[in-house]
Length: 328
Image 1: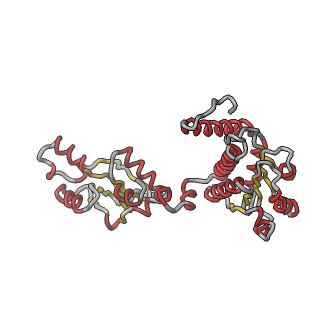
Image 2: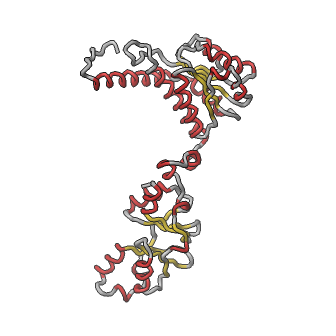
Image 3: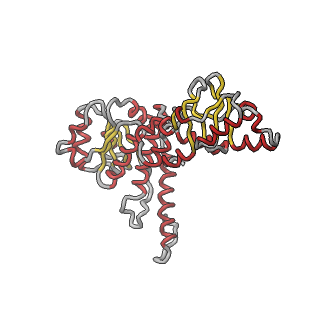
């Protein structure tokens, strides 16, 4: 950023802003520079029957570890191999059927030599991420993804900053493009992220719902005094109305208020089928918990009956269940 003014020591926010803008400019240049080599690298990775082995030295190695983790969590088996350890036995982790993604800003990192030679000897596909178009790594690679010439955010132009940000973004781009190509779904994502809030959001309704034995259910012919006993005896604030084994409607507090307003004093003379709301909002057992939360929010309800493919109620899910699980 040669046009940027000098920043005083008492302007740390401006210094931080300049660093971020410099790296943002690098990312914009990277996006503009993507060409057919990106598609070639993607096709090569999509055909791998083994693992994508990521390697790099120094800061490139730290970035490589994150890229390998992103691949692994999005359906592409991957692990990181340190180039220094590779020449002391870890080359045995890289076999036919794998592919290697090697990161080096200069492309002439000496520690990568043994690993690169190993890929050439055993015909293991090699993809390079480097800024050195004529470097040893770029020349050896089957596909070279070249980083555009940009300034490091370091004022001395020495510390890897913009260059490692571009490496990381390019790794993310490959991982996400592979995700799309393979049809990787949110459900698949949940398999690899069972812990924490993300894992909770990707849990299934059937894992959180109350079973059929706890369901507050009546028939359309049930007198409302009995329906109210069933409703208040539960802890869900509603009662389901079942006809021929299928959920035909639901009675909630709102339905009770509307009936009292329309037919004051006549509530207890009615049957459940006369008070219920038809076409109730429901959710399938295999739906994601996050989807159930969305349905509750959109329809302003606190509970959803869970129904199977025939429309039969098999469970019930309350917003408190989502809160306890960390979804809401």
